[in-house]
Image 1: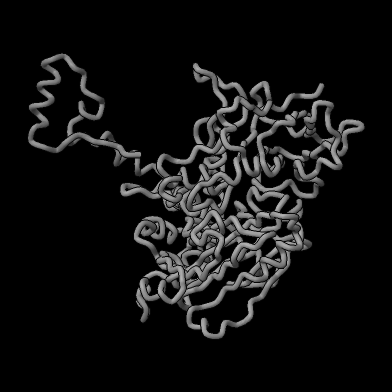
Image 2: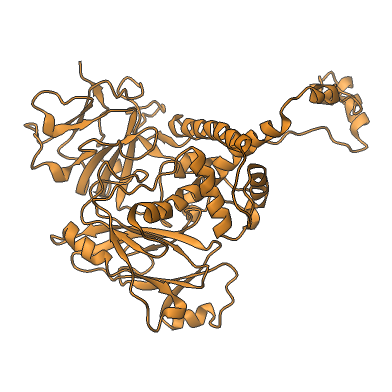
Length: 503
């Protein structure tokens, strides 16, 4: 927020006189004498705990600013803590995620592959396999701020042919130019952080299975350009049965995450102000993070406000999301929402920066508070609907039972899916089964006579409808996904109904 004061030009007296002459009331600021401090000196002398209050403010603002970086470092922390892995190891699944896994708004229907990497030792090669007749990848390589660097696979840069994606570290001054690297068969990209991540979602065709996806994941290679003549074997770590957790938590670990980012990456020009603010919290590049008790207290207090701000951004209509279906007068026809990214960001590849500013709030509350790995180029592979409110416009109550009718003509060439997510963590609700249902489950679900499916949400399954029920044990929201949305479906008049309370 900018606070604009009066001009100090020599025209000020003349302008005041004109304003009074024509009868225009000047603002309270303009009506004050330039020598009138408004007793600010006396009032400031009464402020107590100045350093602590500043620490709380710094904690709040740096938490919102640093949210994407904290989220990315937690992928690496989960690999180290839960899988015994490290940088450049490839993580894969034999079967999709379930409620024991912590991963921001992941799906429970595909067997992901992912990794956390660093180019600090030198240029890093990420070798993505070519598409096969059964498996190909939809996914993105991102930097330490979750900013997309490049999409891979048939819808990405290699167009399904696979490729040796080369991450050049900040300030790269190698022996080979970009042109020479390209001629040598690499796909080079200049980057502004040392740390990166990728998350690849397998697309299965021609009867491909999760086992095929797991085998395909183990053909990904990560190595340094200096090792290209004889790459060392990679570590492939399977995580489907491990309670792997990559979630950011809004406690003392959050600023440990930010410290790790600061220590592991160069300071970018656009981050210098916030890096300076972090010093008040004990985070300084090249120094150990040993916060005092008062600093920890300030960080926790600031984090609470930061979380509240991002949560408010998430649930307030018109901020993170807007209605999809409205009538000619703009009134909502349905409570389902679509993501409303900051203007120009999808076209720019989601840097959340413009020539004039860093879009701090839109970057955190509008995206990375609840999603990761946005693509460089938005495509048509999946369409997301977000549900927060029932047909009465009230936020979902996890103690209440609701019904959602999924029509038989739902316009998804591949399949539809609906998943319940914890409102607190933005991941699966823990210790429930299932976390979602999809068109892939229709063999076990009960269908209506018209071919539609009634899905129930609530603390207990309605009698006889256990196969169509998703448990809700805490406050939640929904994502309804159309995989392979049909061409023209938005113009077709099709609409998904709201959740209705079951009496």
